[in-house]
Amino acid sequence: MEQQITREDALTRKGYKHACHIMLYGDSSAKLFGKIPIKHIVLITVIQMQMRFDGLLGFPGGLVNPSNETLEAGLSRELHEEVGVAVPVGVDNHVSTCLSSSCPGLITHFYIKKMAESELKELETAAVAKATDHGLEVLGMVRVPLYFLRNGGGLPYFLSHSFISNSRAQLLSALQRCRLLSQGEIEKAVSQAEQMRRTRSGDPH
Ligand SMILES: O=c1[nH]cnc2c1ncn2[C@@H]1O[C@H](COP(=O)(O)OP(=O)(O)O)[C@@H](O)[C@H]1O
Image 1 (cartoon, rainbow, N blue to C red):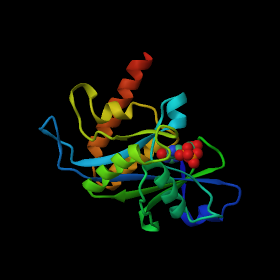
Image 2: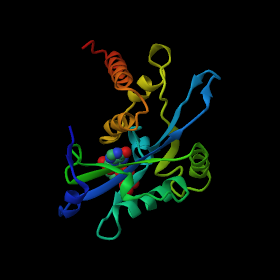
Image 3: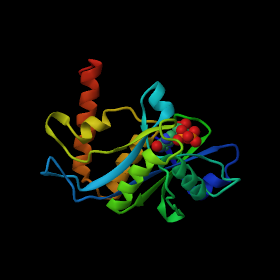
Image 4: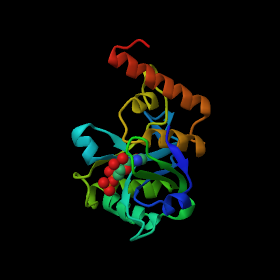
């Protein structure tokens, strides 16, 4: 469990690195196979370093040096490199700050921004066509499937993949905070994903 601290406390601590990541999401009227409502688009990026070596998923963003720029300006700069368009981020988009348990000396800041479906689609196109990091640090943008299909398809399968740092916990708390899924649906997805992980590893417990 990551230790939560305030954004202000984080900025007074000396000797820490700061990583800022963001969940960009929006409502969608599209339907999968013409019948399963997509409801919401949640973008999450696959980052090159993790993809090359262990295939991890994470949110767009990166390291920011608060002595050179504000956390939000640094996050906007990282986003521009990764998605190829300017995405303004403000303090009002900040949702949590944690001391990383997996990476000592790292503080992770998490942000959420709601966008229009048209803006998200433009961003997905630009991420391939214009982003300087495309094919390098970022291998591609993927959408999180927020629905349930038969045999664990959709969100449970997605959650059974590997995620960098605390990004999986950030995703789950954001789904709840933004009311994109009910608490019961989130618990169902987490338990089905856990079951899949056990089945794959051959561990029945
Ligand atoms: O989506 C995320 N949520 C939380 N922490 C993350 C996420 N992605 C990466 N991190 C952590 O932040 C650190 C720096 O992130 P990233 O690799 O995106 O920055 P960089 O591209 O500037 O090197 C990583 O080493 C990892 O521990």
